[in-house]
Image (cartoon, rainbow, N blue to C red; front, side, top):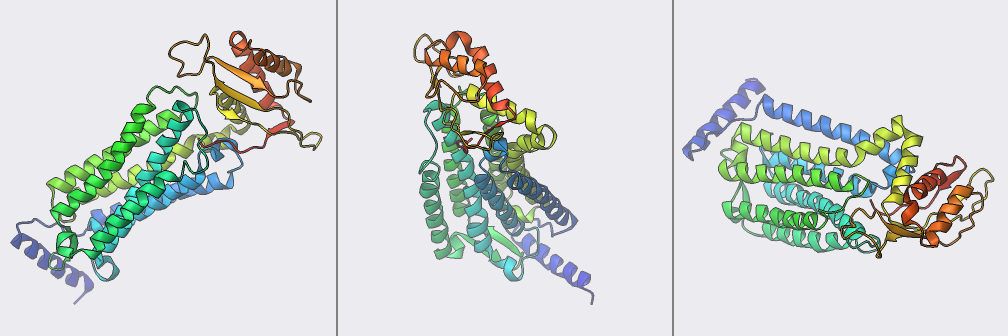
Length: 391
């Protein structure tokens, strides 16, 4: 008897067993294989994008995108996808694929929540930079992970130690991983708690108007991921078990891997494209916008023409507290203080502008100041070496 005939006989037995429980079972077929293939292709493209970004990590607009975090999101997305393949029933569960709690708890749920935590940290960083107007360094980027992930670990451990009948089990007759309803709801609640925190901080940063795209990127990422969570919640609640229904399981997996890949593309694609087609001009514009956004930074500027590393200036940009409009979220008015007003090697226009700013006359000369700053960072003999803050 051929393998195809054996597979058909097994599918017939599973369909009959599911019908005995009042479930209409769609066996694994070509659509499931296509879903896996398309998902692999998506992650392959994202991997190429990420590798290019790492190879060009010295390009400041790329480096500012926090490549380690983007890499964690990529790994989380891949493992989330692998968990979907098992839990959503895209393969016949045999051998290693039959370990339902491994795939559902330690792979899918763990890395769904790690991915969500990365998105939260991204929004949390914008809150500190633009609302609190403080640096996002040291322990601040790590604290959300230290709080969230141990809680997730305890939840997964409790699910592993509990009886399969109250968490998740393999139904051998149907060949499906089946959640208990209470446990499935608890996993959804855990995800919604995480995303409730994300939405709270999105509300807190709603008024920031940076010249970078971080706010718009984060909003788009949050909307896409919320769509994934809503789809998982609705389909997982209406079609039980989801793995039995071809349309439901394939739609869920498609939404999941599109969400994870699009998130990383939204973060990296613009600086990567600019580094390929518009490298120097975009870098100059990016540096000018860095000044315009009013971050506190010290720039170590070295004169590469003379091969002498000389600190040229230290800039402290902050919103003005006097004579500024009530709505100063755009930070249009600010005072800049130069620690070294006489800048060796800098154009005279730059020195004059910095001198004006130090003496409190920055408000009236903002456009000329920005032009001068753009001139400074655009000089072919000048490079900025210091790593920028988290973006």
